[in-house]
Amino acid sequence: MNKPQIYKSNALIKASYRLTPAEQRIMLACIAQVRRDKPITDEVLYDVTVADYAALVGTGSHSTYKELADAALRLKRREVWITERPNGEGSHEETLITGWVQSIRYRKNEGRIQLRFTKDMLPYLTQLTEQFTRYALSDVAKLTSSHAMRLYELLCQWRDTGHREVEIDWLRDAFQLGDKYPVLKDLKRRVIEPAVTQLNEHSPLWVKWEQRKTGRRVSHLVFTFGEKTKKIVQKTPKGKSRTGNIGKNHSTSGAMYGIPQSVIEKKAFPGESYDDAALRLLGESQHE
Image (cartoon, rainbow, N blue to C red):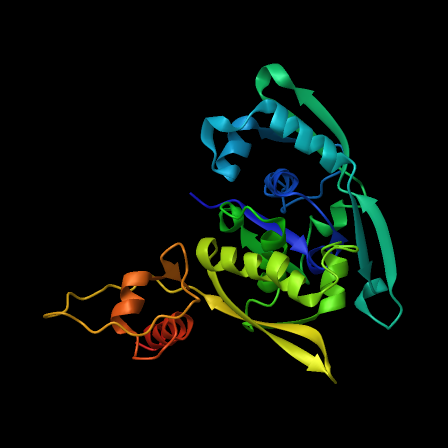
């Protein structure tokens, strides 16, 4: 059975908006239902049930209809700012301010809601032949941070290159952070580091990042990323093996870049950090 896929135009991927994780999941559950083989209108209704929502949240029976309905209502009130060049050419940019959803129908007795996309939103979701990004809905199912979800989409847009550099000011605007985290160290601690940690633990990508300066000011974030390899099989060593010096970048989940903690610890060189050892093993496995 094919996994539900998310298709978004690159203009929408780079748009400025803010959604909670619950609102993101509802939006993605609807986008995954969009038919790409024929035109659709803004009259089409998309269903999201409590079971659908619970499956995405991963909370099972703890999800309630009220939780779903409240998130849908908040989504109805959200704006998205989409900036692009007309016909994809020239230096002149135009910005469209629109909503995601034009109407909601509540069906409490059936444990589901129905949503209609706004008319302005449809071109960014349907009949996409170029300049779009695709990923599986399951790729973000375990992410609990809205920033992690957005970062995953931004990286997927450049999936073939494994490298993306973004201006910090642009990222603040795209995530609609406003006056939050004006100090860079707070932005890194509250937004970037948690998002990267979640992607490394719960997405198909491994991610590393660093800063780049313009003059004396840190102006850009540089992300290096790639597909996680299949689980590396650990061979049973003869006798007691020597464990390398695993640094403070240790992952609380016991894995990094898809490589189990036990494998990294067994194969780390003396003095090698946890992070560096994981990346070295990842590279070695890709060339086997």
